[in-house]
Length: 205
Image (tube, rainbow, N blue to C red; front, side):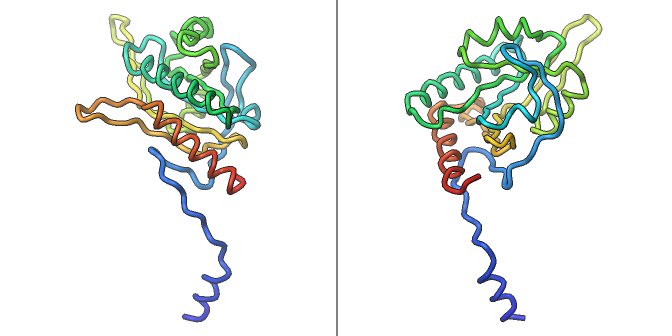
């Protein structure tokens, strides 16, 4: 038994270790199920339209008073820093609304350019598409309306990195301050993104 185990260890392919990022790798990268999303500045988004580029996806809603606009500002700063690097420039930025009842394509078109002209706004046109997309990425959100018509939206705070095969490669987590506030640091985002891309290039993911 010892000899058999040793033989298997010798012939088994070595699994390269993953560099640390502030978040989680998905190895292997996970394929996405069927979905169909509207896009404010382009054609319909499906799993078939994603391959060819890398994609960084945030989520929230345009009426969000603090977390969402802060995250978009931080993503925009990260993207401008990335562009100055002149490498791995095939990254697309996206904002997925968890409140499609109020966030129309027109609303997304008015909102997102304030942060960066390359942001693409996505929304689900049906509850089935919303459930498929949100479940695949692990988006946690809820939208409720009280008797007076007030809308309450709660959601998590993560970023999703889709690789150029259209598969979920990594989930990036925010920094937590000593006071408990969560936010993304543009320099950290840049470091983690470059880490993933360099590792992927070296290992032909």
